[in-house]
Length: 376
Image (cartoon, rainbow, N blue to C red; front, top):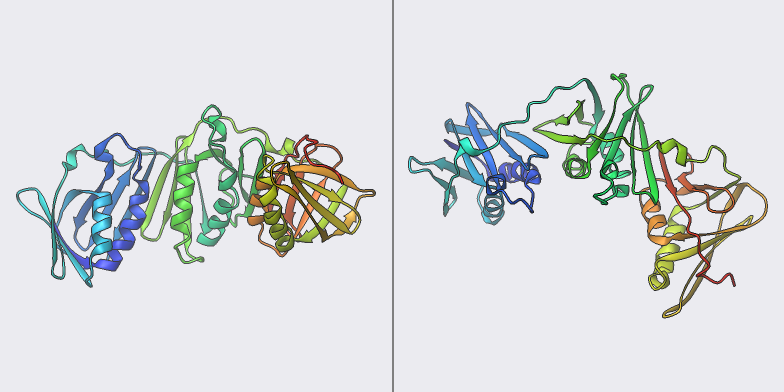
């Protein structure tokens, strides 16, 4: 194997592929990237057996076809430290890999290609297309609510569900629920599958580097989920479990309906969190017809109070609820609008946060039963 290519292009390609390499792998072979040169393109593949990422580098001069197994972290670090326009990579008869960039030269050991896992062979029953921008929003607005409780495997990923020309991503950790919906121009065969956190998280990072209007082709199968875009393919296993009926968590009707500036509420809650950090992150929100009062209190730190103007769309009389401030902050940081809608009922029923003029994103958070914060 012998090829010459742009150093910068190779850096970008390896940066995508190495995302499939687990930093906690106990299997040394999985720390490697399989490199295959054929005709005028170079193919790269890495896997941790849960996800696999393949990428193609087409702008390369292939001198000799062949394959090599290169330690991923080592290759990535070498490319980051080299300063040249082109890099020359050649596998010698001795099995050693030569990497030359300008006056810099490395010689690495190559692993046995035959020891590397075979590509994932999967069957798929549903497929659809999204723009990179739409897929990025679906991932970004749900991935943060995934549970890491290993005893609840069905919450360790994001539910992907198709329904009447729409695609819905859903995640929950039992304390909050994130839902993002988007329209599909072509209706796929209906499906509901749970994709692992790691698979979607790495996909989100890769998609963020794509042209927002580029097409991303997605296929769903019984055991795997595949995403194909320009220059790369990501395949992830799915979690075979039953996701809870998330619609039951969302109140059908809400007595109170307020709108408030997202930015003003976000910064006020960040200030409140300074004091709330001393009381298990508990804050209290009190609503009146034209005002929301945020309070926090901690015996070891002191007290906080701030009021914000709100618009009351519906609901009579004031009410007060307590929340984990970190959960509210998470939701507000992922709302993409200037104003937010806050919907709730009396007591400890779920609170809904949405963009003021859109139903695409819904964030549901559970109040806390507490008397830790004084009312005056």
